[in-house]
Image 1 (cartoon, one colour):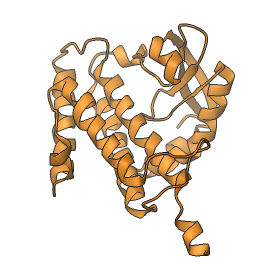
Image 2 (cartoon, one colour):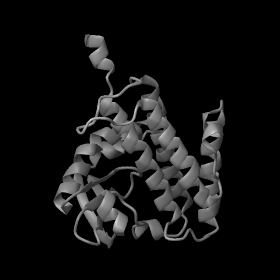
Image 3 (cartoon, one colour):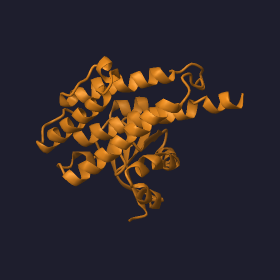
Image 4 (cartoon, one colour):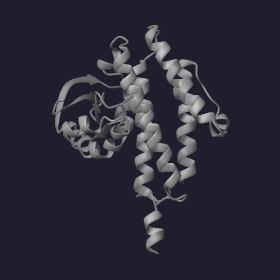
Length: 228
């Protein structure tokens, strides 16, 4: 095991927002108004990612990676500046298909899905309002995540699913299996994916799932209701 947490920096096109991406942990990404701020935010989120890693027996590996090591920087796109989210494949995302590496990333994506599912099942239906008031309810977040993944993300590898199918019994598990296998086949065959790549699609999916998982955890009102 190594004490180095390998990260890459996605640089803005207009100097507005930087994003730091963990090279070996899909979904562990944070943005900031400076590179240093993004690095600090990602470091704070490593403990939040740890339960995901533990689900696939990689918790000890992540726990030892206490030193963030910037292994590269690359140019983002306009959406990087606007959203403060990674919207460009890194150099590592452009590497040829490597089955063991891909299988590891899939295990972590499935762990992210499991974390999302369990969080959605236990948090309060209504969530604490955001700093500006309002915000989606739990069910609205779930529908948003599923609709985005079933539509925008999976259609890129011709594995699109309608929201009503994902909400049907067994539909979500079937979709996830189909999505993973479509990504695997696409990557193994070296098929183009426009401006994206399969490794980027996988980590972007994991990021979207975990970002909303952590949002639900942060806005959960269950403890407030118990105290009352």
